[in-house]
Amino acid sequence: MLFYHIGRYTILMGRVFSRPEKWKLYRQQFAREVMSIGLGSLGLVALISFFMGAVITLQTASNIDSPLIPLYTIGFTARQSTILEFSPTIIALILAGKVGSNISSEIGSMRITEQIDALEIMGINSAAYLVLPKIVAAIFINPFLIIYSMFLSLFGGWFVGIATGIVSSNQYIYGIQYDFDSFSVTYALIKTVFFAFVITSVPAYFGYYVRGGSLEVGKASTQSFFYSAVLILIINYIITQLLLI
Image (cartoon, rainbow, N blue to C red; front, side, top):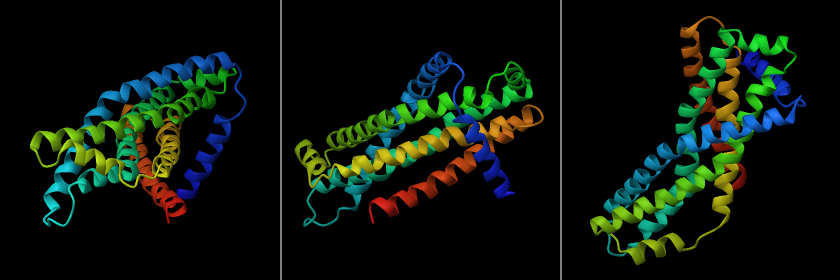
């Protein structure tokens, strides 16, 4: 069954990346998807990122029980945790649920109402027309979302640290700057591109091949999230092994 899905997914991706019929239509779809995937997720990303940074700061501070450990370690830990793992991976998992379920439901609903069949009858490559703009839009906009998440997470840590008095502003900012390696951001954005492909292509696959009624569309959304999450974790491990070890 696994190899069946892998083969059918590969065939679908082959159709998705075939030559578009009219570039103008794809540009319009791309712009709409950027608004939907990117701007539509800003609020959720902001909320999660702010409190994620706040919690990292509080937890780090609560575990510093030796006067030999400098307080700037709080800022350093918040930076490393946010950039290397929390912002790229946790936000990707959240988007897999939000964006992925929307994609799977949208395409699945079009399948069961025979709108996809109508596109095929008109000579339109339905796979490319429906899926390609979503993939390209996510690959384009998700790195900006992750950078936005990193900033808000570090800001959330700074805000809570100052508000509770557990660390001074200078110490926290010094910790953020201490021994900074810009490749950490590059590594995070490389992961983000792969995650963006997964959280759009996998839900699109399950939605495109759904059969039945609205109940099956709901099941397809659940399946798409499960497989997207598993792939994100596997890809996260592989990229980490290749780039950081």
